[in-house]
Length: 350
Image (cartoon, rainbow, N blue to C red):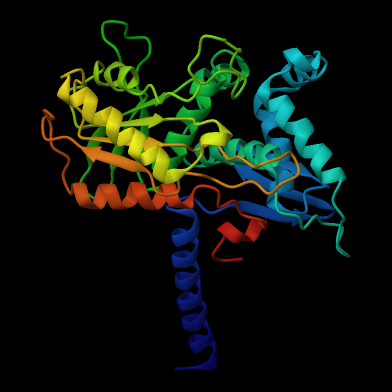
């Protein structure tokens, strides 16, 4: 074997190892398509090519990517609104910029501080949008819902669940919303190892004043209130295996895993004893995906890296290789919050 052939073999092995590292940290997602052209960083997202001089890191790109997806007209109209009427995304952006301005830059002109809640929330939304856009299809329907303050929280969670399944290696197939003869889940996810379609439904618990929701003095903010969401999701029971996700969306002062777990088990047990749950789903996962910190300047964290889930024995359709499916989902949830810093982080050949 020649030196050239040996070097080629080494490069192949190195690329395979880097692919494994990328998959372990970021999931089963497409490589970034990027290059430098003069002073410009160029990146291809799906069928769209974008470029800018100021994109040094991947988060630099993500900060502008949301503006591109939502549109300049929408952005300018909302950023001009009074603070009390501004969209949650605009509030996050302003909080992020304010936080950045308080930080020191290193010798390369980059920030090194751990992100706060506003910045992490903004970047997580941008990365979910990018993941779907670059690996599947980003529908106009979900963009319109993101733009609408009243639908934002539900749309935010739907994006999280869609990107979760993409990271887990599933193919996403959105339901036909033009068919009003029945209620549809959010989308179907095809597991490539079995080619089986699984219907996916996502529900988010609205909380008083959180994530842009209006303040309602009658809302019991500390009550989990998940039984109604479980039944609303189960009422969509499709003619295929069915997985439900419910975000409990706890307020910051109640984000304690063991306490939330005990409260969840208690409420679920009570609902089953009262026979108030239609458990035709195969699996139901309870998450609390929204990041939080104790103050605007404190580092943010993600609460439910280990979701609570239950498996039903009453489902009409079985999931093939269910243990592998669960493992993929749990791994993908644990990867949430892993945002590439460099464009090459998602490119095994760079």
